[in-house]
Length: 118
Length: 109
Image 1 (tube, each protein chain N blue to C red):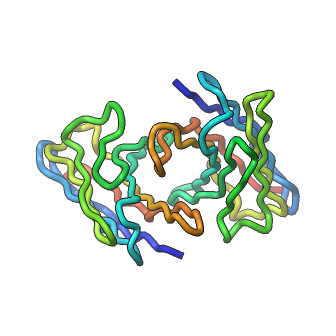
Image 2 (tube, rainbow over the protein chains, first blue to last red):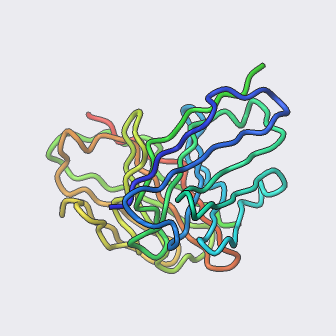
């Protein structure tokens, strides 16, 4: 059973880059689509983007200019970089995967809270 | 961009009763529609995908229906653990995009 675990700083200063890593266990990262999704406090879910194990990516147009998702198959990890952050980027960040369905996220990490503040 | 609209924002239902949640897409998403349940402090859990297929381990009291632009999640007889926020999510093939609705909070009446 594939499991995901997010890691990274819980506090990022405005204008800096938010960097998170998701570690995949219980299966190989060399399959499937791997996504990042965020949820501001008290609000709904926003898909940030995905990476395929081959390295191809697709990003939410609203964030595309600031987002980079990368993959390290040797470490079974994928990562999120979000540049030039501001307070509205404060959110719980989830990594998620589509494993057993065609287009729905059936595997989720527990989420990590990231606060943007000086 | 496809916009997903869920209604109502809040639904108050008594345990044992039936709950019906709606999700509308601004344009057709075929059957590329999923439903999630989220409890406070937890990650979302996939309930339904392909508009009507229950995910692994999801009780039969949860059912999904619809296609095109109108979708429904029905919980046939509410258990105490079903009170949560529910989100719908669509997948658009080209360009590849995932969009969530704003959520329906299902609360105890």
